Image: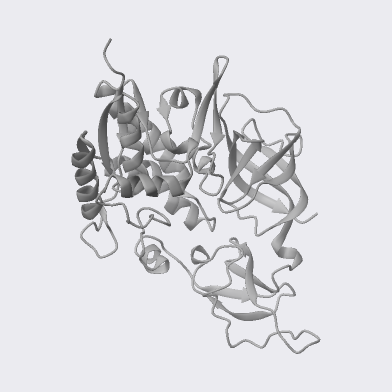
Length: 371
């Protein structure tokens, strides 16, 4: 009986490298695929594509698997980057990594792997897949500190049924130990952070190249103009640094200290940015939210009930109640009510729902209220 063929995405990082080795150890016929998703300025100091390819190829050589490179830059620009720019232009704050997983890593990559004769695909994500009857479930990784199910919540049954996540059952510390034991050339390589195509470059400088923007008034909740913003696209809710009000007279606390200023609201129609003083200002706290573009892993919406959710990746699960009647716009809308008000709930970001360790899916935050 021939071995099952698994095509694994190898990024040049330590996670996908160890995942590839694990699959080979488990008896699969493993082929690595390096995806090039960005090429606008891949010769710049901020783009590490060339070094990543060298690292991925070196690892493939050490562990004894074939690897090829494939260019998905055109698909990425059409399906991910165009949406990213539209959202920022509209004053929202998108999460392109969620869309990249749904459209590139588990669509374009999956299609390409199937053309190569793959039975399954794999990635170095920290998550798990479990078959429950005829359905496939997405579960959090055993290592909750590295769990990446948040970024995978838009995957569907067809995608999950053909996907392996070798790292889902082991802690990150063990992944590093395996890499060191195997003497992989990237064993000590830092994990990549941030948005893939921006890298370590200054974010505002990057957006400047692609977006039209218009300065406008910066106001406090009472309507007082306290400065000028450089364009609503360049700010996100809850932002503290880089607002440009450092020298502004602040309201004093009884002890003579003054609280920091935060971005609290954007009025796109009036091109106005509202800032508030104090981390726990009411404008920064939301007890409900409405989301659209819902995507449910089980192919059907979960029943309204008590669940938990994340409104951003680096966040502990928070208790909430799922409701559909409060979001009557359409089939892809839903509402959440939180047991405790949540800080800086940001339109454009993903809200992801969980029932224990099972990721149910989620949607894109459209609005929130402080009621």
